[in-house]
Image (cartoon, rainbow, N blue to C red; front, side):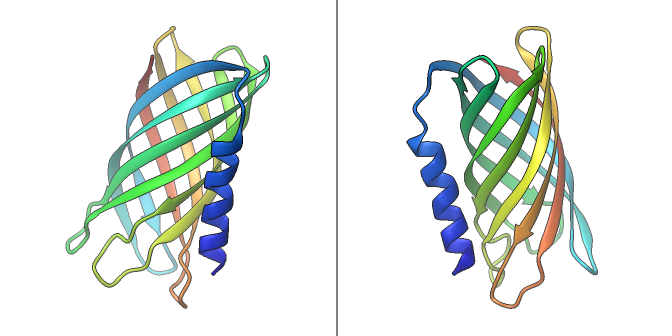
Length: 155
């Protein structure tokens, strides 16, 4: 139940935001590691999103993703969520993120990820980022953690 409520709140907050001015579309390739109390595996994927400026210092955005745990008997997880943050330096964004993710295997559970990250612009079109999410799995399944790094392009 808490997973459904957190997912709904994250999507509603992102959808209800009224932008002051459109900021950027972003597309990225990313990779990292997912771990729980006993296992860790590599992850690779892609994400696309849209950030809206809320004045000069703040922004809110929506994002979709497709990630694959690089282990046997796993499948692509599809994600949807949002982020809210601040522009702390020229071309540097700090943000909090919340997302829902589909199940990574047939008998697994979907999850809600909450965490944060930093995105650093490189020139006018490219960026690198690092992100951490704690995955709330539910149904008596242990929670997991996800660390990602990515490289992308802004439009």
